[in-house]
Amino acid sequence: MKNRLGKIIIVENLNYYPLKLVLANTNISNRLVLLGNTSKTIHPIGTQNFNLAIRDLICLINLINLYDICDYRCCLNILNQYEKNR
Image (tube, rainbow, N blue to C red; front, side, top):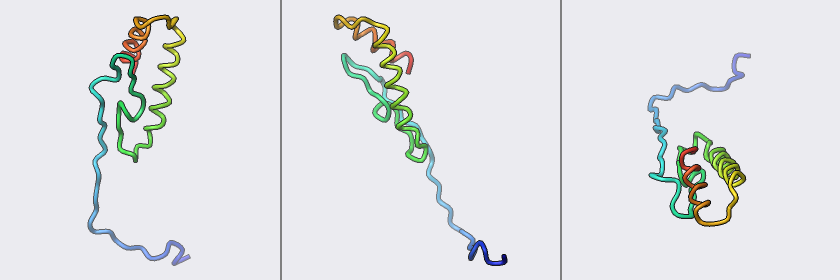
C-alpha cells in the first residue's frame, strides 16, 4: 500500500488562465442570427459552447413556431424577440 499512488512531487510554479466571457454587441442583424459560440464565447474549459448553441437554436425554433412567417416584418419580429430572450 505504501507506493500505490506512485511518486508524489511538489509543483512549485503554478500557472492559471482566467476564464472570461466575450459577448457580441448584438445577436441579430437584418435576417442574420448569431447562435452559440458566434454570439458568446466562453473559455473552452467551460465546455458550454455546444450547450449554448443548442439552447439558442431551441429558442429560435420556438419563436419561429409562434409566428406565421409570411413576410420580412415577421422575420424582424422573430429576430427582435430572440434578441430579448437570449
